[in-house]
Image 1: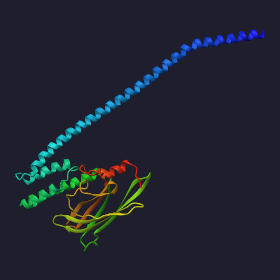
Image 2 (image 1 turned 180 degrees about the horizontal axis):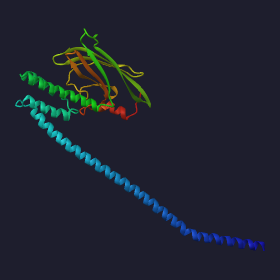
Image 3 (image 1 turned 180 degrees about the vertical axis):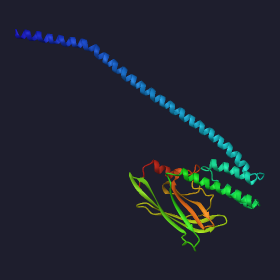
Image 4 (image 1 turned 90 degrees about the vertical axis):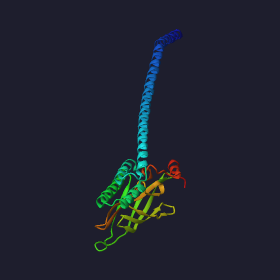
Amino acid sequence: MATKKTVERQEGEKDIWDKAEIVLHPLGGLITAITIAMVSYYASDYINRNQENEAKTRLYTELMSRREESESALRKDMFTSIIGTILQNSNTIDEKILQLELLAYNFHESLNLTPLFTYLNRRNNSETTDKVLHTKFKNRIYDMSKEVTTKQLASLEGVATVEKFVYFYDSLAFSSNDTFSCMFIDSFLSEDKLLPIKHFVHLSIQAKDTVNSTVTVDLKVGTRIPDKEDKVLNPVFVVDFFEFPMIDNTRLINDKRVAVVLRDFDAKNQFIELDLIFFPGSHSSLKERPYYDDIVAKLLPSRD
């Protein structure tokens, strides 16, 4: 009797699970279908949003590219027209200065305009006999060059280190000090370690021309890297108001630049103000290109 009841109980329990399976089987299929539908919906929404963002990015890039192309074409035509007329002898000094102003204010970051400034200044000195006009043209040329320098320094603001050097050459009023020293700090990554670089700079004034407002300087830059031999650069050059920092600079290691800029030459009060500017090569003029070694050093891990 006990065995018979047990068999009946087991058959009853089996019937209950069978009924549960019958009820839950369609429900499981429904849950699976809902899950698949939700995953498909969110996946489709994610893909659509990505495609929409990519389309917006392509549109923005295309618009920027077209704008750059139109600006480049305009600047090209403008440059060709100006450079073609500025060297014509039929133009007056006033017209030539105006053309140089158009060039300087539109292409000062990509062109070395020093020869044109020097050329017009020389033409003004040799051809303009009226003293009033000569002074007027000279002031326009020099004011223009100073404004270009100021614009380039403004574009370097935030990435450049500037050290000022004021030299008084009136030995009666001030003690003569024709040498200025400073240090610029840099660093580079080597084997996951940030190593310091020290640039020791010594700037000496060798000669001065109070008539043409030029200064001959001796720039000595000693670079020190831990566990490596010191490197020294020692260029000697003439600085005037037509030298611009983004164009006229000295290349250092680790793609850094140092420039000497003449900010003031006061013959009346007998002092000269110079700026020493230290900045990364990525912010130099558009005509400057980094060396391949510098590019490879930034892309690949260094091996000592």
